[in-house]
Structures are given as structure tokens and as C-alpha cells.
Image (cartoon, rainbow, N blue to C red; front, top):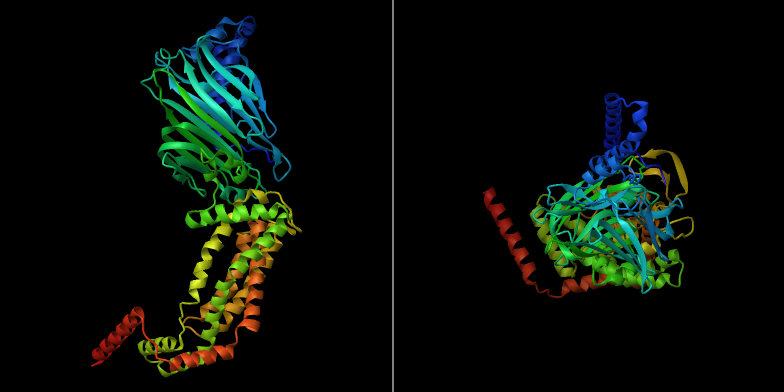
Length: 619
């Protein structure tokens, strides 16, 4: 993983703190006799300055040294800093919670999770997958005391108590005013689960916490890079949240965004294939949500994708806090998230909106899961593509039949164009009559294409977000969820990248030949068709550039799909459709009286009226 870069705010913060320290040094000028007595106090001042830097400059959370309880001056300063909360014997240590799949570290300072590691996964460069690491996240409660002090739980020291209850690890973290007065964070980790129960409660603080002032939950996180292409990963990194009425909303995935929402049940800080989720059994009445994009288009070495921030006021009932919540640190995987149906965490997966999401979630995902359970993952994509194209072959047949009919009528349409080249309205009328007599609809070729759009878009969303494809290899592709590389360029081409992927090249070639078959034969039959030749060459080129940085599994699908479509159309042309028979059928249709439907009758009448008005205008 690349070393984290400092942003301009952090640099300014360090410069200001350095300047303050120098100013304090020259102002105080301690004598050698006073130096030892002031040492502990100076350490505490530096710790408080680092805490200010953390809050104001949004720099990583910095571990502070424990307070020296033997130094009365340091104790007094600390008690003043935390207001009504008295000091505790807790040191700035850490407690580990772990099961077979998840490793967590919880710090005594702030009682918060300071490390969350997935045990079964690694990044593109073989580093363990961390969702929380080296100060990229912070969590705390910001509240006021009855003596008008403002505190943040991140500045408090919590006493840890780790026990085992019915096979579950239970960690109680208490920031105490006295043995019977405390703020508690309670973590409960179950075996084999990524979900950790998290309870926030207070006891005996009704005279300490000011219930008339807001108590805000604040959660921040910078998404750590996990994928080979950070631009591609960032495209699917997004803040998603669920409302009380089970509506799913999202902040922008391409730019900075913020929203003030009501009735929020859970917050998901998605990092493409992994998610950090905070769910609450008591919905947050309001929540201020912010997402900031940290990736510049040309910055390929960035270590972070987006920065998320959420602030939600908590209700105080009877002067006390009591919230049952849950932390989820784990894969954005339907198999895992579906285990928590009551919370609806699977809704955080970006399947797509409307019918496209429904197709992905309930058809393609289960179908591919079934195929990949007994086939290699790349072969499973090929098999699924073949079956999808076979299922869509009736639509392909209808499309090609329409093209064949139009090809048969081409000489007559050309003749009408020459006959009425000076009268566009009359040419259109006669062309429509020809279509009606021959039983041909010029729109019949468009309908099959429209019917395929939901499948096309659903698969476009399926491959980049399918967790099952992550780090699965096929042929020369090392990871079907990322781009394949056959050659690394010594420079970067705008919109293309600094590498050459083979699957997009194969897909572009297949699309070119497909368009030659479907578009080339009718290229000169319609007005404006000279532009179609340009489109025929442009579309494969756009495919080549656009998919060079996309998931190789998606390019593999388009290559196989277009290849199969070409073979199906060749088979239809050679073995199923006979142009001579189609021509004979059209001639038979012309002889039969053709009854107009209401739409055709209305169109004919409108054209005739327009023709009459045109003639009247010439007089």
C-alpha cells in the first residue's frame, strides 16, 4: 500500500503547532531546576494540542501517552480538560476482539475502534484489507455538561473489561465519573460474524450531561485504497443510507456532496468491495452526511478514495443515553449481508435502480453463484453469457427478420425516393403505404433492441460489483473484477490509461463485425445514413477506451456475447431465413387487402391534410 500523503490542511496544522511550541519555549524559558517539575505538564499540553489538531485539521487520530497520576499538576490539567469526568486509572492501551473472520482493536482513549482488519482478504498488492487503520477513522460523542463544558468522548479514557458470555466476546468500555457514574460502550462479537453489537449507554449522568443541549454522534472515515485502479474503485465507493420507510439514498460517487436527512436506520461507508456500516435500532431523527472525493483523475498513487462524515443527534431520555447499534466491518457480499435481513444491509449493494437492480439481485446473482459453485469463475461467465444469449435469441431472430424484410424492400424504397425526390411529404406517404401493404413495420427492428436494454444495463452493473469475481483469475486476467494487462505503457494516454488490456480489444473487434452485419447492409437506405458509417467505426473505438480500465469480467462478457450473437445471426441467415421466401411473402401480402389500424389511419389522414395544406399554400 502506498504511503499516505499529507494534505494542505495537515501541513498548515503542523506548521502552526510547531510555531506555537517555539513561542511557548521562548516565553516560558524554564530554568534547569524547574525543567523536571514541568516535564509531565508539558507532555500533557502537547497531548492536548495533538487532540486539537485531530479535530480541526481532520488529520489521523494520534495516540497520546497516559496521564502521570503521580503528578498533581498534570492530574489537575486533565480533570479540567474533561470537565465533570474525574480521572481514571485506565491507561492508553488497546483491547483486541477477534474471531475467525474479523480482527478489531479498541483503544482505551475514546473507547473507539482504531483497527478493523479482514482476516480472509488481501488487497491487490497482497496487504491485509483494513477498513480502519493508522488513524483513518474516528468515532465519538460530543456533548455538553451541566456546568457548561463541551466534551468529546474521543478525549476521555475508558476502562476496559473483557468477558466471555455464551461463547461471545464482550468488551465493556467505561469512562467514569465515579464507580456508579459512567458512559459505557459495549461491544459484543460473535463467532464467524462481521457484525458486532454495539451499545451506547450512560448511568448516573443525568446530573452531568446537559439534556437541553444536543449530544451528537460523530463518525468519520477515509476509505483506504484496496484495488489496482483507484479511479475504478472510487467509482463504486459511495456513502449509502437507509431511511425509516426502507428507502435507499446515496451521496454522489463522482463529486463532493452533502445532505441533511431524517429518520436514518443505517449508514454505509462503502469502499467498493468492502463496507463499514453503522446500524441503529433507534433511527437517528436527523443526520448531517458529507462525502468528499479525494482522488484526482491523474493521481494513480493515491492511498485514499473518499472521506465520509456523519453527525447525528442522540436522544436523551430521563437524563440518560441508551442506544442499541451494530457495527459491520466486512465484504460487500450478498452471501454475507443477506444474513442480516432484519436490518436490510444487503440493500447497500449497488445492483442498479428499478428493474435493473431487480434482475441483478434475483436472477443474475443467484444464477452466477450457482454456476461458479462447480465451474471456474471465468468459465462460469462464458456459460452464463451463452445461456443469456440463447434465451434472447428469439429477440435476435425478430431483429434480423425485420432487417431482412427491409433489405428486400430496398429497391422499391429507392425507386420511391427517386420518383418523389422533390416532394418529401409524398415520398413519406408512399413509403408508409408500401410498408403497410407489405406487412412490414420500420419500428419492428427497434423493439427487440429496446427489450435487450434491461439485460444490457443489468449486466453492466453486475460484473463491476460482483464480490464473487474479486481476485479470481481466468486465462491472462489475474483478477476478473479489475482490468487485465498484457502490456504496460511507459506513458499514460488520456481516457485510456498506462496499460493495454486484451479483453476490451477482443470485445471491440467483435462489436465492429456485429455492427458490420447489422448496420452495413442498410447503411444507404435511410436519410442521414452516411453518419451511420462513422458510428460503426466510433462505437468499437469508444468501447476500447472506455473498458480498458473496467473489470475484465465485463469485457469478457461483451466479447463472448457479441461473438455468440454473430454466430446466431449467421445461423438464422443461412439455415432459417430465406430472402426469396421473404420476398414472395411480401408480394403476397401486397395483393391482400390490408386493414388499417387506428394509428395507421390517423397517420395517413394527418399526412394527407399536410399535403393538402401544402398545395393550398402554393396557390
